Length: 360
Image (tube, rainbow, N blue to C red):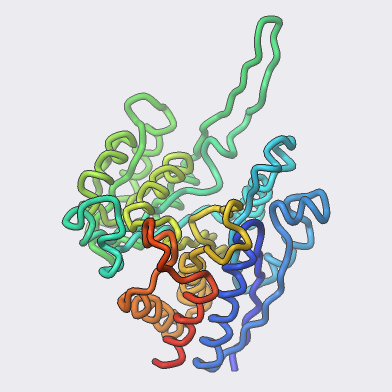
């Protein structure tokens, strides 16, 4: 029997609730497909700050490095906003990505047929949406140096540096082209090359990589236009390749095409070693502990972990089919149902999906 060690990071807010549901589903699916998952829970984010004063303890980093995959829920809480930046929950996540060299963030956006009417856009605009945002994750303006704040006699000035090397651009581009080669063979690289030197280098290097993939159609689009096109005609996109800042914004915009950010999974990968799998949404502290959270994004992140990290494709298929089956039957969490009170809580939707896995 195959055995996998998974580092589980519940984090903050609704994190522990959606983690409990997802862990149960993974135990069910592993029993069904005859493999074993050993979970080790570790601290990150606000809970880590409360217990250790550090948003990413060394113990957590080492456990993640030594795992077969890292499954995280969510981090963050406004009560930590007044802390120095290096002590905030988000800094722990950025450090984890950097320490594990997780340079490629993969965010699939696909419309479940049963949720077409949950989107704020017209059904004919989104019904054929099936795209992937490939975001460079460990470079760009979030990690560039120098950065900081300077006080002068008259005022204070803050600055960040957007910086990319040819190596960073080439490796994320290769990931995007390889993904697209197994899809519709279309890539749209998003930048701001008309005003940014770093974007012009980005465009030049993407063009060079494209020569190795002649079967893939490459186009370029400025980020402001890409934001508009995602709302106007999202089905035109197959793979969107972009940098850290632009990818952060566009992937969240793309997530809302589905009707709720609570539906979107993601994977953050490196060349070798464990990947990090996490829902796109935040920690939602306003509904924490109320059994209102939608766990589906984390469930689908677990499915990505099974498929990409553990090569358990049949198990991943079962989870995705179970989610689709439950949604087809009309079961909804509060974020998918509008103002109605006729919704299932986090635990209840998890049980429905678990039952669907067992019934298959």
